[in-house]
Image (cartoon, rainbow, N blue to C red; front, top):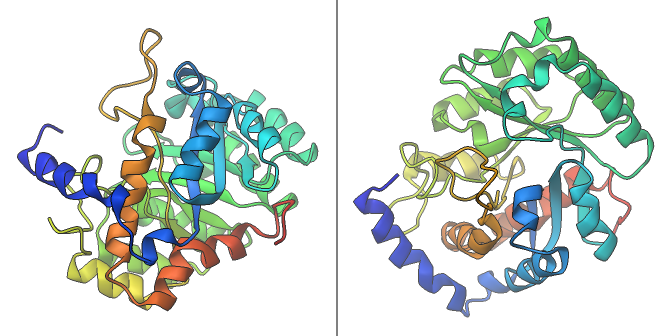
Amino acid sequence: MKNINCYFYALVFLGLSLSSSAQSLQPLFDVHVHYKWDQAEMTSPQQALDILNKAGIQKAVVIGRPADRALQLQRLAPDRIIPIYGPYRTGNEKLTWQFRTELIEEVRKGLSSGLYHGIGELHLIGGMAVRWQQSKVFVALLALAREYEVPLMLHSEYSSIKPTLSICQENPKNRILLAHAGAVINPEQVEQILQACPNVVMDLAARDPWRYINNPITDKKGQLLPDWQELILRYDDRFMVGSDPVWPVDRGTSWDEADSGWMELQRFINFHRQWLSYLPEEVVKKILWENAQAWFSNNSTDQK
């Protein structure tokens, strides 16, 4: 993580918050926001909304840990916050959720309440997860997402795309938001998923110079690498942006240290606004707003 390139990137993106370009003023729909118990220690619900305002985020999909943390933000801004049901109570459940059968009924109650408009983020970590067909919990959550007609956010961290393809191809009626555009996979692999699974869209959260640093999507100027730019332009209706305000990313959730991710949210959003500034205006509008609005409009109480 402590890579000299990170310092260069930090200097490049630090000044972006002062940008006065027309593009930077466009409203943004952030599809990947967390509000966790250890973030609340540092950032109150009102402070979180103030941060969203400053970043130009007019709508946000929020994942709570535990789930009802997202409702704290939604109650303050019901027309802006779209809560989805966060399956975790603590950090280690990223690895154990597939076996916690109580989660099935918890998610059902959450969706039936009408307060939540999706399920996720569900982590599948290579070497730590069983095949999805062998998880009673995962199979049930896929069924619940279909029953309530809500999207499912999936964090698949496999170097191979076969597990992800298996999920999306065998569950074509599920709408799947693949977090981080597949995390560790390359543009060619991303395209294979997009071609095979019309029910999948991608967010580009955390594909910035400070997190998935071994799989960059931009160069040192903040412009998309050629393969990524070609891919995003070809599938400009299948990509969205997200801040994923979790920081620092190179440690597990600690009981004695607050997560300061909300203090970094502006930096993460500036990263997206920078690479988008190189793209055609009609593409920028799709990725900043229109794709997410279309994807979540069926589930949000705000249909504007």
